[in-house]
Image (cartoon, rainbow, N blue to C red; front, side, top):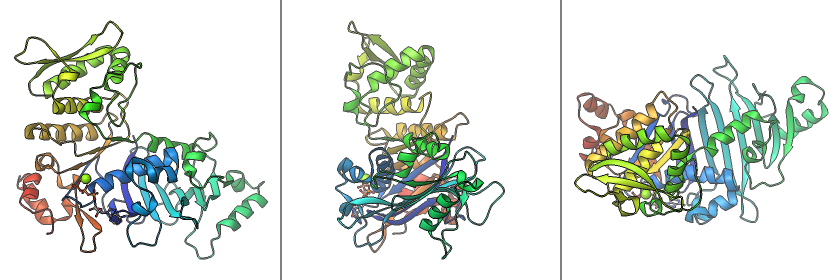
Length: 430
Ligand SMILES: Nc1ncnc2c1ncn2[C@@H]1O[C@H](COP(=O)(O)OP(=O)(O)OP(=O)(O)O)[C@@H](O)[C@H]1O
Ligand SMILES: [Mg+2]
């Protein structure tokens, strides 16, 4: 399963320039671990970082202009780092499979003359087999909606765009002129007619561009959860659905799907989950006369079961998270904001372990990214998995990996839990 090794974000609200893990332009740091938790004080930028992933996935789905207006973002003026002139930029460094060579996706978004956001630059590139230095090969390069795309399954075209002599328009002309040449045959000159849509969205839906399509599918598969227990309590009438949606309000549909497609497995899942939620003895389902499926929780001490509608907020929330981790075809990347909210402290540590086991699992599991305020959550993690966001003197966020501090590393080696070090102010600089 694909893994993000690193991400760099520039000019996105408080994130003027932050990098997590390894990216093409910063190769020294270690890649991100399967599980990543971001901690920090109020206002340090956790939600902003979480939303940066949401923004990218919205850009792919709806184009940049709608993405700036979605989820209360309030338009590009509000999203762009205050007082900064440059474009909003993202760089994602990721590997398709365990030993694959990493791919870099770069995206710059800016405002046009009328102030509307558009995609200024986009590029996908990868080094050739055996090539560990020098210029990687691009299989998509777009400037202002124009550029070239590589059609083949393998390799790409080496474009030394940092070369002062490099001129994309000239390259496009050459390709058009020399279309009979082998290299040009595999390269396509492209011009998008909508500069507010991502090239990977437009070209990635074409069969001729398998490499771009696979990156598009990767981002499409990201799941960000904004679960609310009330949403999970709703009783939908529609039929079975394969995956939980971002709000968890299709819980009932997913339960129907699991019951229908994986009946035996689903029973085992419910038993496993019941074991992990204190006070719950058994979870099963009941079919209503009108064909819906209700979740039934057998509470220790009570004879009659409770339905999801009567369950406590937090029990339902833990259930939804645990069910998400049992998804038979998990998303490549799962982002959860403050999963611990309102949970009993012992459950928080259990949940952290569950997330981490899921992420580190040999079976295809999701790469997990969470933001948290809870030392108990962090207790279950190692310094490499924890990133500390802080607001700098200039108001912009900085980020550090807990393992970069040798004092912290040593204390954890001496068996001090990481969360308690955070609680005792070892992790933050102020
Ligand atoms: N366009 C912008 N440029 C610079 N900074 C901004 C911009 N928009 C918002 N901010 C700042 O970003 C900060 C980070 O907010 P964010 O909501 O990400 O914090 P948080 O870590 O999630 O906090 P909490 O723990 O309270 O949820 C805010 O305090 C705000 O000052
Ligand atoms: Mg927040």
